[in-house]
Image 1: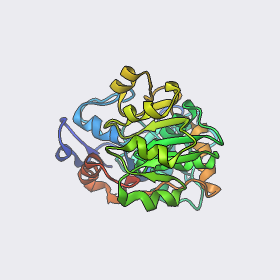
Image 2: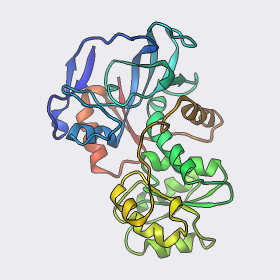
Image 3: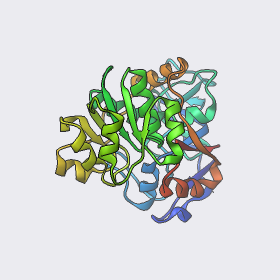
Image 4: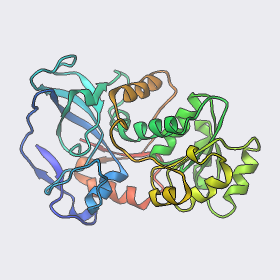
Length: 305
């Protein structure tokens, strides 16, 4: 099969489209013919040699930790899924490929009306946002501040918080403000004066804050949120330790079929639609990594297989 691999750590140029052996599913696993694979910041970290603890990397390696496709083969003992079923799911590595093998319980059925590109970007950013807002105890009637609200995690977090009945203030560049209004958020520009702008946008106060940006977002958040256990970050773990905020790292329980199923149910109700900023062929994965690392992508980048 074709897969994107790298044999050394480095810039996006180390990514190559190569031929690798077709994987076989073991007991409890399924093989999926991939149609779309989302591109995550964690994938670029893996490529640079700074993989999160949840990723085990041995060279040559294939990035990619979310996908959508059609079940192609079943391992022993698999039930509840059949060859030909359309699914979306996650695997911490290996999804930039024509086929991926994963435990069957790391997938959920894809709704018939969900496009492949949307399904391919639902699992990672969606579950990160869902888990983060749950850990920060965001509830109806509250106000939550989402930093980098137009990014992959941010766009999902905004929609989830709105669906749960919260008011959302989202930081983004001016070019993304109308987009955020369309998601139901009150947009504010980041940079100097952020705290004052958030206070003006949310005179009722801010109950919780999610940082997907870094770059001083936590420092601003501690001026706005009284309870630091309700300030979380997915990027600035050093800052979280220093300021007494919550570092939202991946790990056991961060992703589950139940969590992903809840996201899919919200999609089916029209309450959650991942935004895709760029659709790129699998063979051009290096360009996808350049876009993610440059920042300012609205929503997600997806590889089409």
